[in-house]
Length: 338
Image (cartoon, rainbow, N blue to C red; front, side, top):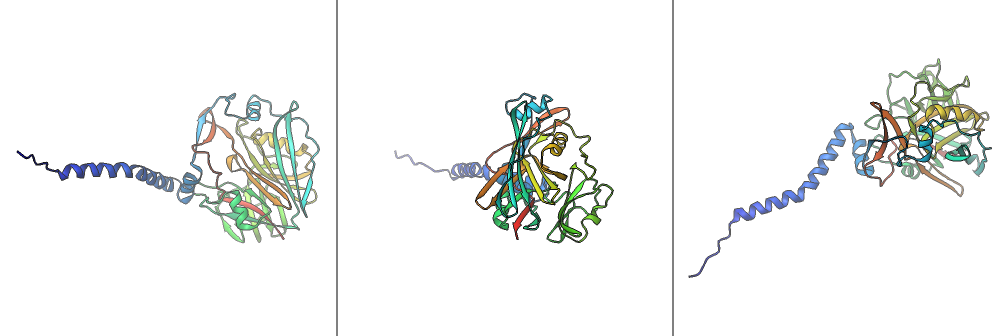
């Protein structure tokens, strides 16, 4: 007797459907993650963070956690006053452009450094640029603008748009209703590139007629010689970027190599740093604290990696889920040779 084998199409169909479902699962999960990033971050900034950087999360740490740098651990232990600063050794790398690296020591032990650029506004044109999609990191900005220097800008919202008033190539961006009591970087208007102390001054008047401007906070060194960093938790430590203006009117751009400084301790250090600063204004910090220089034969390429904060009484460290790319900079300040 010959046995006849009957193929049951419904079994094969079920297997096929299961196979397709398993194959599509990662794709659907990725699509859901991208969609979630788009909607929760209100736009493409969240998508680019997810796809380009992998996003970041806050994790609990102890003050002596090995994931923290030695400088952070020392600061958390209360050692927040550095040694007297060494003389700043400026080196000219192009006309109107000087660089230096100022070590920061505690008890003779190196804990941080200021990466410094000193720029003559008569020789370089400054631009404040905004790209809310967050699809340009510091090197992308340099390639797109031909800049000799790029540094991260002020704060941005969840969708990557400016969180403070900004003027970019004559266009006003960011909030129109805003109370500013700290400072701004201004190009044009009543003078060339300069810092403006906004204490007692309306930011609209300070930026009137400006081709470029950027409001930020806190003021690390005001016109009265004092800082306005009061009320900040000393355990909020981060890589930091700042702008300064010296007695000769040159713009000094600084980025810290590590995250030893709180805002208060950085403000206390700058007046005795030997930089001859008249004003100093803090910019955004943490992993977006980036500075890239390409002037003459000199090259600098740095982005931060640290930020700690206290949330609900717990000390936490900001950590990337996937550490394979630099953060995009939705706001950047660039200096282009004239």
